[in-house]
Every structure is written in C-alpha cells, then in structure tokens.
Image 1 (cartoon, rainbow, N blue to C red):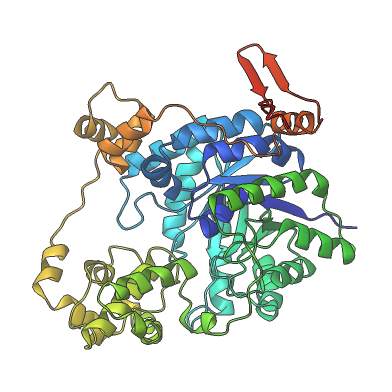
Image 2 (cartoon, rainbow, N blue to C red):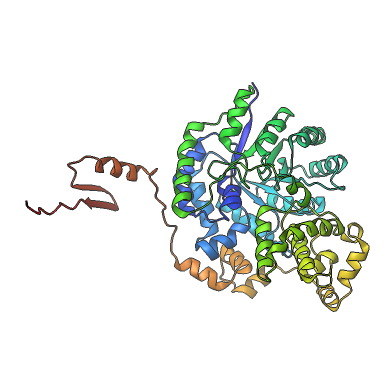
Length: 491
C-alpha cells in the first residue's frame, strides 16, 4: 500500500478561514505536542496576516508564538504560507529579507510561497529570499477558472516553477473551485511537468467538494494532502483529516496518521469554539454560483457590509453579477487577495453609483497602472483601462515613484539604531500604539479547557461526595479548592 502524507493547517488556514484568526497562542500550546506526535509531514502555523491580527487584536507577539510552538513541536517541520507582507502595496526588499530571517530564527523551516498572478518572476524573488534564510520554498500554483486558465496555462506555469528548483510544488485552490472532474484532468498535467518534484494539494471546502477532490488527487498520483482538524475543518476551511484518512484507508492507502491522538485536539478546539462562540466547521451544500462569481466567502461579507452602509444591501446579488463583468474586463485576475478585493470593491461601487466606472477606487487605478503586477496593459479591456486612467487622480498616482531603501535607512526612520530586528519589522508594518499595547499586555496567557490534565484531575476528585477540600501543589504553583459546608437550618 502506498503511503499518503498530510500537512496540518489547523493553526493557520483552519482558524483563518473559520475564526478570522482569533485563535490565541494560549489556545494552541496545550495541543502542540499531540500535533507533533500525530505523524504529520509538516504543520502550517503562520502567515503574514497573523502579524497584524496578533498585535492589534490579540495583544500577542507573533514571533514569540512561533518560538513557543517550536519549543513544543520538535519533530515535525513548522511551515508558513506567505506571499507579500504589504498585501495592498509593495514590499521593501530589505524588509522582506528581514522577515524571512526572523521566521527562520524563530523555528520555521518551510514556506508555501504565492503570487496572486502566478507570476514566475515574483516567485523567483520570494523563493530566493526564503531560501537565503534557510527556509525550504514550496511554490503555490493557484487554481482559477477563466478563459486564460487552461491546461496549457497550468502546464507552462508548472514548468516555470520547476526552473526555480523548489522543495515542492502545491496546487492551491483557496476558493474551493476544484471539482473531482477537473482534478482528474489537472493533476496529471502538473505531475507530468513537475520533473519529479513532489506536488501537494491544498483545496478548500467552500463548494462542498474538497474531500472528494482530495481522494481524486491521490488516485491521480498526488501523495501529499493538506487537511485540518475539526471543528476547524470543512465550511470555508479544508477537508477534515478524519474524513480523508478514513476514506483513503477504505481505498487501500496507508497514512501513518495517529487519529486517536488527534481526537483530544478536536475536543479541545470544540470546547473553545463553544465557550468563545466561534464557528464550528460543517460540510456545505454544493453551490454552483460560487463557480460563476468566484468571490471568496469572507469577501462576500465585506461587500455586504460595504453596501449596507449606503442602504444598498438588497443589491448584493447585482454586485455579485457585476463582479463577473468587472473580472472579465480586468483580464481575469485570480480571485485571491488582494486582486479579488479590487474586483469586488469596484463592482459594488458600479452598482451603488448606478453608472459603470463613473467613480473608481484608488486600488482600481493602481491595478490599471500595473502596481499590483500582471501584464494589465495586455490583459485588461482597453476601453475600461482607458476610462479608469483618464482622470486627475490616476495621473497623480502614476507620478508616485517607489524607492528601495536600505535596512539602515528604514531602521533610522522607524526608531533608531538600537531597534531589534523584530521590533523594526513590527514598527514598519504597524502603529507604535498597537505595539506598545501588545507589549504591556504581558506574556502569553494560558487557555485551559477540560482537556488539561489538572482540570481533569480536579473534576475527578470533586466527584467524590465526601470531598470538602482539594489541595494541589508543585514548585511554583499551589491550588486550594474548598466546598462550602451547608448551614444546618434545623428542623
């Protein structure tokens, strides 16, 4: 029987897709050793978006999170998923190099690397930076549906990725747009052109077909699959490890995954989800409209909010239809961050204003200028591009020149020569006030559920009817619990 390897994405994509990155480090640490011993090929823990979320909302140090996880996950490689740092802008090369050095020092050894256009020249820059820091690069080849994204497109982009000698390739389907039928035709094409470099599958369950696509991919030759652990699987997340492993066993494959060691992990996060009122992933019904507009689920929520603010929420269906037109006129960009946001925002604006491209966002202008990559001068509808750029704001944005700065220049601008590398990166990306608030919040706070051995012990001891006091102590810790004696009311 052939062995299928698994990459766990619960701590990164699972919580990003379902919990909007609200999982704290304290929630992760109690189950880290179990993840490490479960037999995963690697564990994905981080993406650049976590930096802002950790600091601003969770008041946690994102790099300390990686160090703490690395101190508990010692056998299994830690992985990140990274495109650019500045999602809606451009990165300073010196800062980008620093980012990879910091991650490597914290304990990261692998990274999936993306470009929203699948641009080989951008892959090259990012692969080079990661490899220079000692991190093994895995190139994401992002799946999309359009007249441009043909078999020949994926064959050629696979060959271009191979030229960069990555550790692996990954067929990345963030929108859950793959079907078993398309998987059956696409996977052999990529494997044929991969020159023997291993190819992973990373597909979401947004259309309900993710688990079936995993099985089809394995049957077509893929040997590494990305999954998540319930309750952070299914829905907008990735397929459940339990479902995929069970079905693969039934098909005659072996996995090496210790499912029983993962059931307490699922229980741990289910307790947290219920206590914190966070979503619990569940299979979704097949929805063909997702293949038409290709708008990610989280972005639909943002469009609804945008239209609600101008009392136009009832026009959301029209905005989704307009998204299809705008995407075609923009040259069929892949509907991933940030390109999907540009398309969706402009579509919503067209519907709200009532006249197409009468008003345009700065992002649409910069997109048409090529600030976000892609051969837009060739791909875009020429009349639409001309209309977007025929306005004073476009001429002003076109005149902005980008200058690459040295790390010394950036360090001087954000705080001075004595600034540590991590503090420098945080100050470059975030406001000083948010960083100060994070620092003042103190160290990571433990998150205890009934899966904790101490909690289980106390719960078991308290079940004895004659127990009036429980005392537990160890060096640096003491706990005393007393049960109040009922007052004798007499007869």
